[in-house]
Length: 171
Image 1 (cartoon, rainbow, N blue to C red):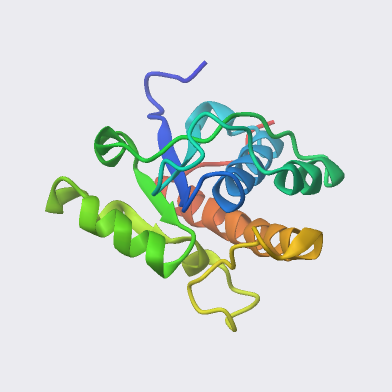
Image 2: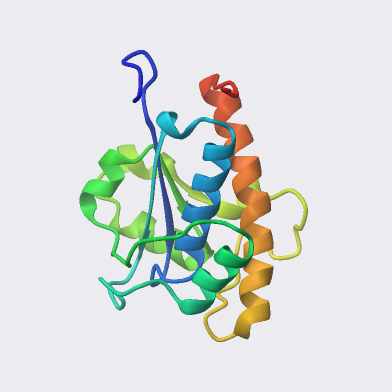
């Protein structure tokens, strides 16, 4: 249970359909915060800028890659809603298109600073710029590549948040 002295940090990962990249990032980040015993300090979710897959399970290769890496993944697709901008502290877009869509749908300029690119926090591979590739049509190897990118980014993002919010590893 979260202490009343430790506010919960709310993180939303966003891609287009919320069946590949964003749920994978959500699962990886949840795994990392659990390993660091920081799960009580966070609320993590994912969503899509479209509602194409609303209520449907995550892509089978997203689930397969996570399971192969012993990362639990559960949930169904949902679209971003206007209340997400108010509720979440960080809204992490998987690519420029999602970032642009999130900016254009943002209900108030005061929430725009919450919207960031996921790969702003990825320090190992700058070739892709700010775009996590969409593995939807790329086969299983594409999902593995995205898993690696997101693992690195989620780790760096967690380090950023820990430093910014003064969180310590808990045992």
